[in-house]
Length: 298
View 1 (cartoon, rainbow, N blue to C red):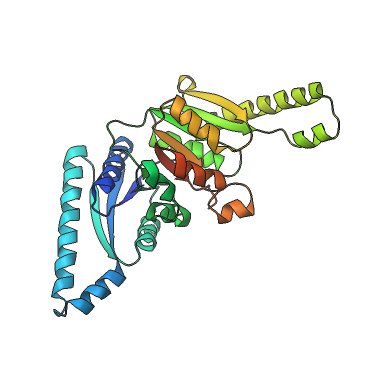
View 2 (spheres, rainbow, N blue to C red):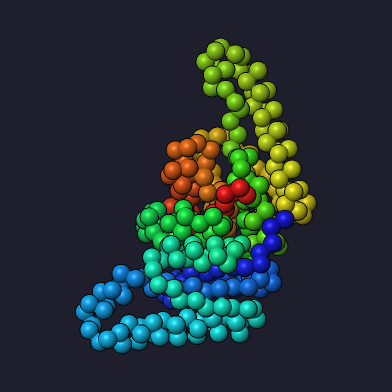
């Protein structure tokens, strides 16, 4: 069972980032964990400020003081509202690098960040700060799209039984311990297409497919048991293989999900390079919050 002891929330002090800070605080309260708010000030932007404002460093210090004051105000608000321990930290450098560094140094169990929101901007998520944090971080990263009104209640965890599946199920339970969960697996029996081309009877292939679904259900039950899912709070679902992101988005809409938990990478080396084709499409097409999980040996 994964325990959430330390959370790091990245913020640029904007309204969308406040949603992420609130969600991080809500999770921290439920898990009795600490929370660190991190704001990264671009080093190159400070260099430009020094170049245009030759004030002997006064302009730079004023900017940093203002940022730190606003960050501390936010930390104070969260501390009072959620009754949790909240630290604040301003760092200078490339935002993704600094956020990931702070999370690593503090051994954060979860990194929380905002995204670009919904609508046509969703498809520009890849390449954004949030996506680059996901790509770089060895910790699970929660990307928050909506202002939280309550703890997560309806959670989908797609699994492919790769090295990412176990950690995905466990972090889902840690982040949303009182939610209802759907474990989903896209079934494709090994060599199924080749068997059809080889002239094997359709009846035999159907039996083979049924056996593959049965095996997938068994493995999902094992994952659920290891994560400590309550028997009456989760269901298992198998779908036909293909573009796996499509049934994920369909389930999101049909079940009114508020969180999708998915592994960072797929199984192939090419998917490892590209973050994972299914994961990328889910990030771009979903409207719920998305938690991207690192595997246990990452």
